[in-house]
Image (cartoon, rainbow, N blue to C red; front, top):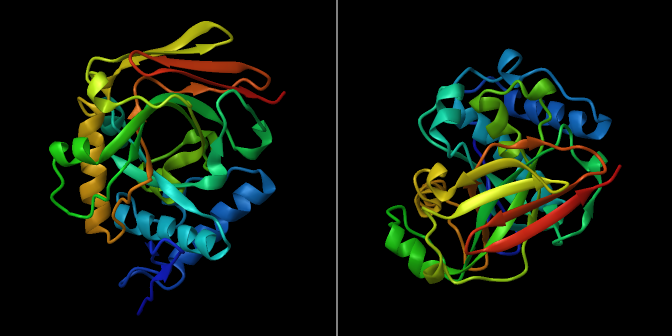
Length: 283
């Protein structure tokens, strides 16, 4: 099948049709099921059991790109990307040897301290991350850590709110990739910090639920250093034809285990050298 790219106002490209060689309609049906899960607030059985070939990550990304293309056409604004599966233990659990990525839209962002409507997200969980805000494009497919350092304008502490349209979080790599890498919303701190002032490999993190620690970690849990994760993303996005741009927000990967959300509860993440960020969920 011949495909044509659709671009948003920033010139980003989102491919919208099935990959060549796939049975006709596979991508469209996966998109339909995921949309239906969100609209009915009813998680679905894993896509790997119904449509997507087990381990076929390329097909899963075709589903993600199709959904992104539809969203951009409907007026949503792409503001960056998130990186998932940056912990080697989680990679082994899902049988993969690399991270994955999803798209961040402007309407997924929440202000520091704001209350999030719990009903917006299916099976919500939270995790603490380092957010990179780029000051330069990263257009090349051979991006180095030095390139990432030079391109980074500032860092922010972040809470990513993940969710899954797959019942009981019973996900494989193809399920989570198709479902936008299980990304739902994100909360950024509002005090920018220069990269030069933070040792990202050693920065410690604690995520608290109503003042009690529920997740701890450090930068080394994110591919050894969040800089490594962003370099991987930049190379991967460039190869895919959707390179990272100045102004993009990059959620670089969890620094510790994700935690299920309790409706009505408050969560605060503190990352050494970066400060804190907080959110509360509606009852």
